[in-house]
Length: 350
Image (cartoon, rainbow, N blue to C red; front, side, top):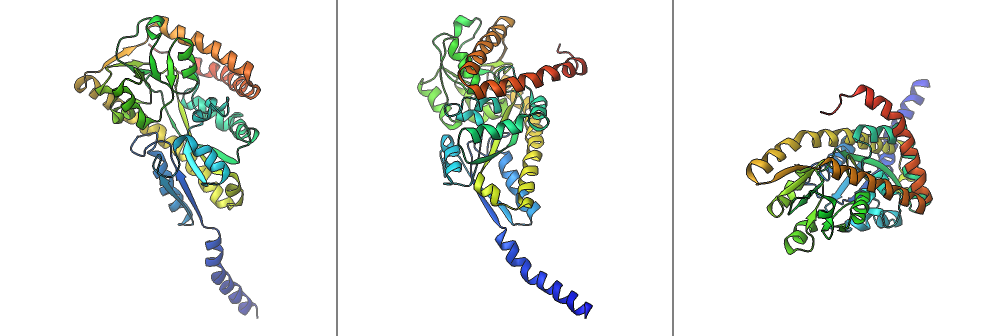
């Protein structure tokens, strides 16, 4: 009798497994803000999609839509929140007009480098604050970091910038909190998606631009129009990219699918960082040897000006928005502690 019952139980499990598996299937339709042709920005998300399929045995899949194919890049947050789409891949800095604190989860001037940023997110209060930000602002999304890159170039200019006065009157594409710094220094800034920058430069709608790392900027062809490329990227020492999933969809997903998505994004953080670090030197060599680009380093005067102006911007933003102040204070406290490790453990810069 015992063997019969066991056989029946096994048979029942086999018969019900396909139905349960079918019920658990999840397809994430994921518009992205950055072309998959851009290494480090858009390239991580197809690899995430591949891993979701492999790790779930096909029950969890992601269909990636290139920028503008399903939802325009600047509409992804609203579309995910309302359920128009169930997921999206972008960067929090794009929501500065809706949520003042959002850029702090994307890139911070003179802020944490990639390792420190991840430390704060995963082992400080960063992730709790990240989710709290969207919850408090009334967006129905579950968020997780899903890629990170190292420093960007500081910008592409048609002329040399030697003093703060040289910035006054420039029209420049600029991202995030760094853009507010540039505005204080007399620059008229605009935030354009990557695909719109080259035409804007070509037509004279902007005089200068920043976008990303050298290997990424090379794909967009800035070197064909402007020849002075400045470093270091004080405004974005690291940049975080996010995967957002509609919260109702997330809550209804199985624990297994939630774990697969979470860990695929954690793996992508390491993978995207490694990819970015591996390919920049070749782009720099090509710029100098073949494209006529002049690589320039900001003077100590200019860096001091940028930093002092950022301090003023941070103080103003914190005074104007309580949650910005809360996040900045937490990040600053973490960084103050981290600095003891950083200053003692890492080689000094030459």
